[in-house]
Length: 336
Image (cartoon, rainbow, N blue to C red; front, side, top):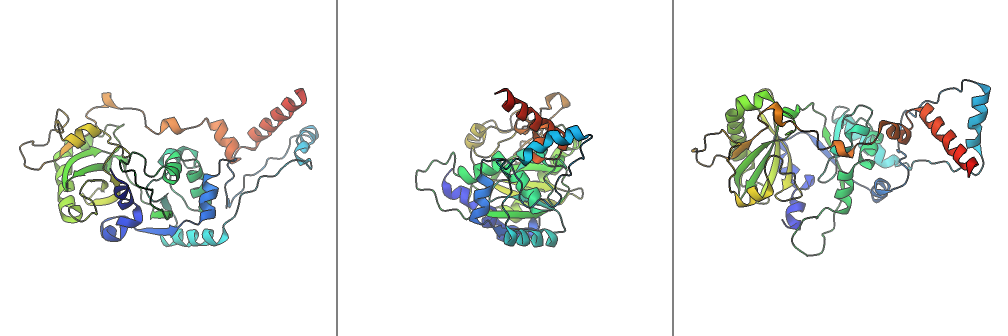
């Protein structure tokens, strides 16, 4: 995998060519000061919060007196930077896409940070929703700091113009998403995207699903992407129509799901025991899915979660926990 292959999978590099078969989206250049804010390792203070957390009234004069210490003149107040011009452009784009969007950067979406959102979803309606997800995501940080990890060429890193990608929000069923692996412009493998769950309809319809994806690939994707080795994600809706979701590099930086990269690169044992698609059919890709509930696994994003108390403190959503935390810190300072 070379750096040019990574660049070709940037959203803005492929979206103009495949606009008709994917979800409507808006691409906005990311200002340098916004990038700096997103990479800041300081306390999580979300910019642009429309509805600041409500503060409960103290239950007694004693409690009111106890929390007055935070008004000390030496106490620093954390304030979020504001980006009014960028915020206006973002809100206009969100409105043009129906009021709710799925956000991502050039390559990655903050899938590892969904747990921190109030709705436990990547559905965003404001810039503050997007900032909260982005500042909590290791995937987004990797886009900024290690976009060419696992690349084999040692040429200087190309200059990257970072972009905020806003995709029209669609309620996608995880059991209808699939990842497709292409080598030398040949579709060699298809994997269930949400491999941690068992979906009965996939097992029952695997031949039909495989055939629909092959037809879509031959009509809309094959020989039209910038590289001959790549990975693409699709969604098959309830009517059987296939939609392009994303492109990814053909290499270790991309999750191989129910395959291994050794299998995909060598093309050995791809059909193996996982596929029940007619192996005699010429050019038929290997199709892998979770075959039973016995093989269900935990979500790979669980390791990115934090305790709920920490989330409540970082977002300021629970005033009582914040007050308890401040009392504890004051007592510790008095003991010292």
